[in-house]
Length: 536
Image (cartoon, helix red, strand yellow):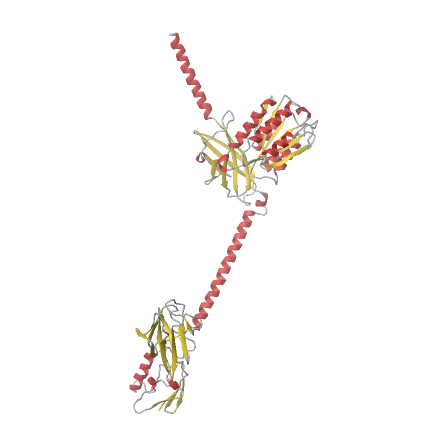
């Protein structure tokens, strides 16, 4: 019976203990350690998430956070542990070297600092400052652990007084212009300020302005913890105390673990100088159904609000867009003018719509049709008593009684017009003597086509008659699909050379006579003399 009672009490005790442990494990301390605005408008907030024993809590997911900027929810952000995001930290160790630190306290302090340096990550850097009667920079910021260790070993107690606030202020100032990103100051002292020119409020104001998180460690019976706790709380750090200097190494290691296991929340702010004043950042953490929240105020960087980096970028962007718009408009206008001028300069046949060369007096494309019109009109005087000759475009007409004189302008002899192949539409006027064709640059008609020989063919003019001759080529020369060696050409013949097809156009006969213009009409004679047609 007694054993059963003992067993029952044991069960109840274990159950109560488990409930307490469960409740205890669900509680966390959540705070915003600091905010980095050095890359503004991109902001990075560093968060402390610790259990009730000040151990870092891990495994927090991004969807457990909510972020609000001036009461407006930030939808896009990333939240990762700093050790995963490659976020290094710059740490300054400020060590009290006043006379009260002589002996074992200073020795234990140096040992604890060496332990901290040894635990630094690859992306971390540190600097060393001591303060007593004066403030001394023992080692500037570096990532060289050996150099830092040597600097710590060289520290000695040299002063009688404790310039605590001057030491804190000078330590915070050392960050300015030297490092950016995550910054922490760890201050170790065993007493209170006895000699500073600056005040605690000066230190707090500078820590907030420079986004420096201040951790303070007090030890011994004479330390005054209240001012240390105040600056730590207002700057996003923590205040720690130990009565014995022998435990300092554990405290430094605890700070090191907390810094390594912080969370970084990164997002792009939508605020710029128009939203003047301080910006309030609120972050909520949902941990096991319990919502924790913390807020911090920060100012938009001065060079962003006054000179307006973002505004200047916007102005530069707007100016650039205006220049692009104006430049595009001018370019379009120039192109339009060139197109209009090109269209105006084109000589178009009103009958067939083909483009004519400027020195043509009539269209070579529809010349055969016009010649037939002349013949038809000559055979039917009832339709056209004055013998209009439509095949001549730019002619001067003179009337002399019943006689109409048409002053015809001289015509070119002959042309080759590319109908198919490379350079389609091009027209080549044939020489009075010999015109050579081929790929070689020495030819009169040069065609960039591998199907042609370097010297492929030549056309010669003899007494108003044109002949084409193949120059013993591999692919040959064809006239009206007939493979030729030497052949007389007539108007509208189709010449094939390799992959290029020409149309041969002949305008004049010997002496400027055009046989098709010789016709009779109801007892009237048509005479052609010196390129002039006289109808009697």
